[in-house]
Length: 348
Image 1 (cartoon, rainbow, N blue to C red):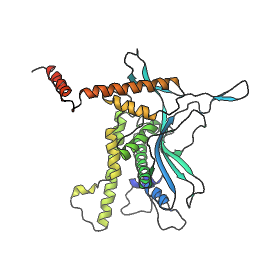
Image 2 (cartoon, rainbow, N blue to C red; image 1 turned 180 degrees about the vertical axis):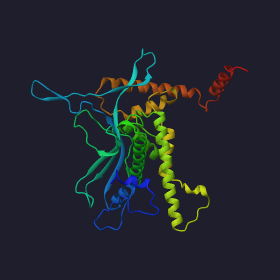
Image 3 (cartoon, rainbow, N blue to C red; image 1 turned 135 degrees about the horizontal axis):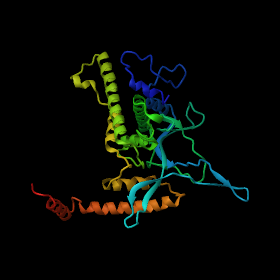
Image 4 (cartoon, one colour; image 1 turned 45 degrees about the horizontal axis):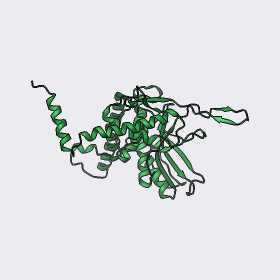
């Protein structure tokens, strides 16, 4: 239901609702839900404990790869793919902060104890290389060195959980539409973004910031996604306006046809604020260090990750020192910087 119901938001429901994918919690229940947010809200209202939280963990490319020891015991071998961040320690001779590629997703946990579920459920929303942005089984290799890292201090619950699930559905709807309309390979994976990017958009829309690192979307395809969200906003606005007319509500002006949708507005704003870590510049050094350090697990199984943490901490300090030189509260430094800027300009 979480993957099918978002498509309802892409249909004209003002005149006909027979084609909607609808879900009821109980047999013969007259209350039907037709979008993922309302479905989660209905679960919460019926007594289920629901948590939603963005989460990252190192991607183990060896899955459960092990070697057998002489005493017949087994030792797991950590195997990861490392990326260069583009930031280096000063005077290190090229020693950079490298990151082991993580997998990111929006965890949805429905704990047992509710009236409908005898056991808990845990699924995850992300853009998968198989070609679908949506909800997937949240299973992970059971290896001792993997340690999930939540992106937020507290999970979203109640209305926030419902809103996050609805936003995830909107991101999936727009992402899959872009991939289909432009015939992108692997459902746009690696072009529109990867699992981390779909996670970061929802987190930013919910919180006004994201802790996800790295982000790898590219400009042209990110613009396609933003435009598709904008088109979807118009579709929802048109539905709302038709429903208002149907209920004898008059539109004040023609422009009111496109009624604002708060969730889509937040997602679109997030798209205009989130950058890409493919080509990092000094302007984002502080944000890079913050996100990279936030996403590192407590236990670092690779020496490269240990060194990357140290480098990122130094870059954060260096960035703060440089920014403080131009802090507007320091009038002298601000004046010196301005004088230096004007002295380098040529008079035409």
